[in-house]
Structure formats: C-alpha cells, structure tokens
Amino acid sequence: MASARISARDLAQIAVFAALIAALTLPGAIPTGALGLPITLQTLGVLLAGAIIGPKKGTLAVVVYVALGAIGLPIYAGGTGGLGILFGPTGGFLFGFILCAFVVGWLTARLLPRYPFWPALALTAVGGILSVYLIGVPWLAVTTGTPIVAAAISMVAFLPGDLIKVLVTVSVAKAVHRAWPGLITPRPWGRKRDGSSTDATTEAVDA
View 1 (spheres, rainbow, N blue to C red):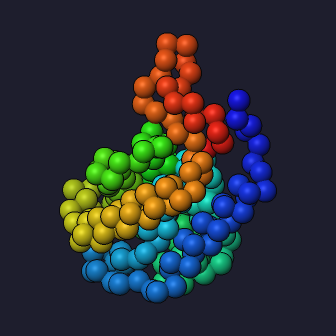
View 2 (view 1 turned 135 degrees about the vertical axis):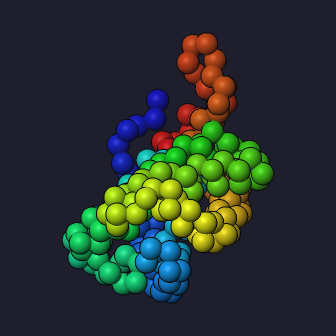
View 3 (view 1 turned 30 degrees about the vertical axis):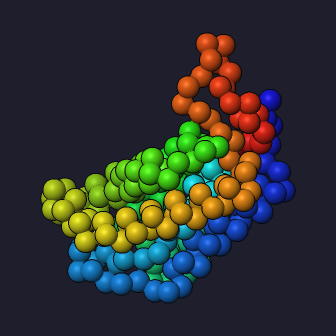
C-alpha cells in the first residue's frame, strides 16, 4: 500500500511547481477590459502542476503559491501580492486554481498509464477551465456588484487563451509521462469488485 507521507522528492516537486506558477507571472499581464481581469500565464502553471505531479502534490504546489502571495510576495498577476488581492475581485480565481489543480490531477490519474491525447485534452479543458470559473465567476460577481450572467459572459475573452494553455499542458504532460512514468499513480476508472485497481501499476507510487 502506498505511503501517505510526503517524501523529500515530493516536497521538491511541490516547490518546483509552486515556483513555476510564480515564474509564469513574470511575462506580465495583458489587460482585457473584462471587469479589469488580465490575461496571464498562471493558469498554465496550475494546469501543468495537476497534470504532471497529480492531485495531491499539484494541489499543494498551488496552495504554496497562493499562500506565499497572500503574505505579500509579489507573485500574483501584475507583480502584486497580499491579502487585499487574495480577497479582492480576482481572489476567486486564485482559489479556483487550487480546485483546478486537484481536478486536473484526479482526471489525469484516471487516464494513465496510456494518457490518450484527445480524451486528455477534452477532460483537462472541461475539468480545468470549469474549476477555475466555478469559483472565480461568482466571486467576481459578488465583489464587483456585477450580475453573475454578465460576469460569466466576460469570461469569453479568456477562453481562446485558456484552450491554448490546455493544449500545451496535455502535450507537455504526455511527453513527461512517457519519459518518466510513475509521477502519478494510475487510478483507472474501472475497479474490481474487491476494490483493487484493474492495473497493477497503481501500486507503484503515491499520487
């Protein structure tokens, strides 16, 4: 049975992906005019975290990133940080990143070890993007006094970029899992009656 402990290797992976998400804020943000929300590359790092190191470690990487920004490090979009940003209009998307990493990691584990490209693309797009919007849009509507339908419609400006990020994520994840299998424990959809996995590789490592 896989251990629930977090190993030194796990901690290193969590740190690397937290740093990657922070680094992806450096290229800057593109203003859209959609309720003041910018287009950034943060989401790409979040998607990669879930798709490459799995639901547990990917989620922890995003939690570390969000926490470091909350204490004031300028690692949020536009080089900002602090509790004012975390609980401001864009804060819901930061919390949505946490859910996104978990959902994408959970879905990825169900697609491994084969990780077929098109199913991965579809599930990552639906699961990843909706996870962010599920929290971000209502939060944005409440904090800006915008009708939730209008807030949801404003997300249309972000969809092309988000879909490109999903395409990059799945392409990178497929190559990584082919080269370094075992980063995520496969958790096939089908289970035997006794509750064991239909794939013996699920016992390899902790997701």
